[in-house]
Image (cartoon, rainbow, N blue to C red; front, side):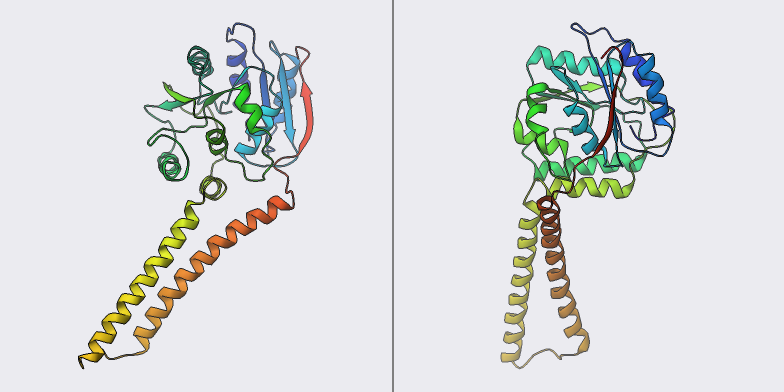
Length: 301
């Protein structure tokens, strides 16, 4: 939950009304937005019809960190992630669970015919999935979404990850290949605006590529090799022209262009290596993935 005061009550009531053989619970993770979400949750705890657990983060850590916190406090044999804005109808969450039970899959993703997001969010999601096609061990074109059902077995494997930059789908694909997807409905947001900014999407892309793949390093190596090859070809051409007395006239512009090309390539590769080293530094120094301020449970729990 992030600034969810206007939407979370309706989502919880819809989840409570589901009929699940064996029963179900609700785990709410407050990722420290700026509104009165926790006050709404206090009322939900008081009137709960199913067990509810509310976990309050000490500060904002991000969606994927909050998901892992939720998994650590969940007790069910399967766990379904839902957005706090009502765009993932709880009845569709039940369908994800039913498919997982029927097929024995460890992870079942929901994919959409039509997404009710802003155009830039849809482009960002498309780009993220294209990036994961290259960087992660998943079937080409398989759509990864935040609306997913996972088995307790897989969740237990993933929650041991303590790094400060988790990427849930990368962690899942490291654990299992028993994944599937079904088509689900995606409805318009009930209230408010999305907390996903362009900066957050870029951070997610970096987590997907840098934390769970060495592909960027290989691309940097390839760029360096291509630049070196172009430099060698240019040297051979200049040498041939000089030998045939048709050599080019040299000037400041030519020298600066060559200097900027090579220096720019080197700086890009150094920056990429620095990003890897920086994240290793933060992990070694045990930057917390999340900090829980409090955990409250309903009487049903």
